[in-house]
Length: 226
Image 1 (tube, rainbow, N blue to C red):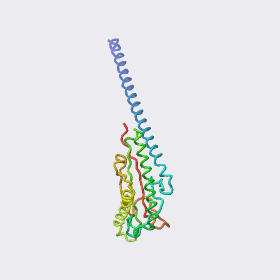
Image 2: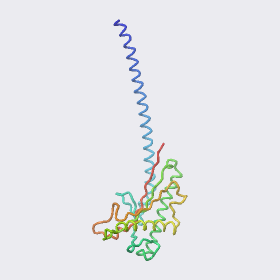
Image 3: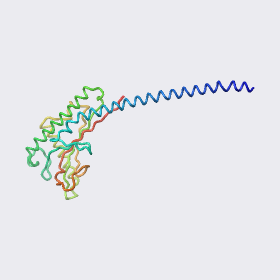
Image 4: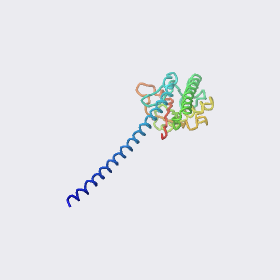
């Protein structure tokens, strides 16, 4: 009987170990495939990010028209756009301080921004890996802080209308329309008014009117990579 039990145990033990080995082998293969796929996805994402960074480089290097605020990952118009009190129109000479020179610089900035976005468009058309990449472009207006806190809401509205006026100037006066069919599936344009809020406001000894400024933000959106 003892011999019979021994003869039964060892084949069963061998089968068990073989099964466990097979299970571990399958798990190893599945883990390897998953990690290999994930590494390829990360490599593709890194390549996309580097491509986007390279295409945005001309905007970062153009110190005359744009200042890149690395801390906040955004662009600021490098020149003053000053409005008279409670004014917002870029077209109206009575609204802007130094209107002719300001409009000329705004036009130059619009052309520069368009050239960079056109480069992003061209890169997407040429590289299939960029097929699922699009961009959020934000035109944000800021207002200088008013001494009367009751005007907080008003200044949020005012800063929005200033950003809207910048967008309208580029679109209606210069024909630079980032919402045209040419930029379909590439640009999601948003116009915002940050009023007295937002990060990175100028403080300290800075003249408060220097916070009358425009910020341009470009956020890449990377879809699922198969």
